[in-house]
Image (cartoon, rainbow, N blue to C red; front, top):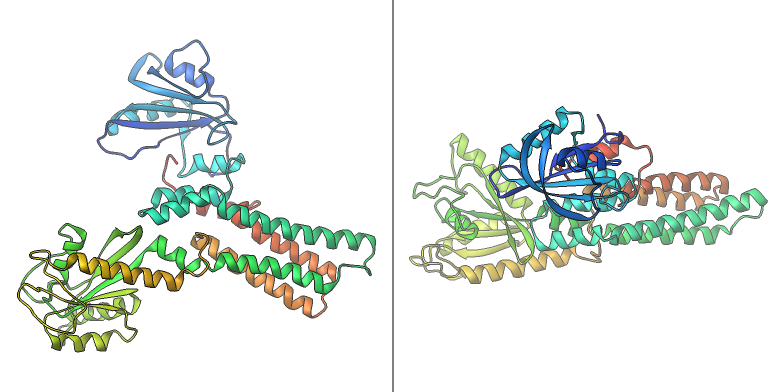
Length: 442
């Protein structure tokens, strides 16, 4: 079974599993009035866009008392008829209804993201909007959610479509003039400028890459310092729960421990690392090597020390000046040279540390936020990079006085790549890659 097969009626649970008050079951397909009447034992056709309390039956077996709604295609999310059943929660009821409907051959289990795919297939949304739905579901911060909502509203799609329209206009003009007279084609200088303007617009979108990566994957904030400096205690304090083991024994953390939290709308991935010190123990050396690698990859380093002498270590590790220097256990330690003093025992200095961290986050964002008008995911980034390469190749060919019939062929190839962003034609592999990443029921 694959996504391009759209003749079946499909069914899936939209809500997550586990104990809860309700579950939502979604059914989509052509002309579901008969199915609606069969499972509710109702003689009249359902009224579109209404929700009503009904008993759900399979044959003569009562399965649940539910709220059921009906949306008539094409005015629905998928463009087909949709039935949504709000049944009682828990893992059994919804599973029982879905299983019995499938056993009666009234529907089959939906593939991951198949409802969204049918919305795309029926022209309700384009591919960027479909991806933004998945991004919105997976978002963990306000910034990511807001950028996903912008794409769902068509912000990125509209710009890509405008660029496509611009390229199609150029292509049509060249082909029209070639049909009339091959010797009287558009001035090469004008063509160069027209194509370059499209490439410049793509570069403008592509300039959002670094910012997009940050809001999707988060900033990497690494805790570093000598053993028993209080890294794990601060890690747990910032998260608000005991994620890392805290002990007075040196070297408790042998591997990296990661967790994510939100700070001022941004996704922050905080990494607790092994203590850094001289050792001949093989396991400890592996942890120390990991710490060095994490420091290299970090956007920001939270370095913890207990005395002034410890500051020499961060000078050795942080050649790019990415660190906030924290005097740890300030209830017992006193020293100059640190940016902030904190105590996880009584909470002193934590708010000041968060203010410093947020200031540093804004500084990092600013260096990567040049013209960051759009959110573009990794797939879209790859396609846009290919488009820019293809466009630059066309410009180079024009400088070499390429014939306009060959240029028209290159422009058609450019349009094919452009379609991969919003509407891939006969690209089952792209479709499968995108929608298989969705959750079932979406």
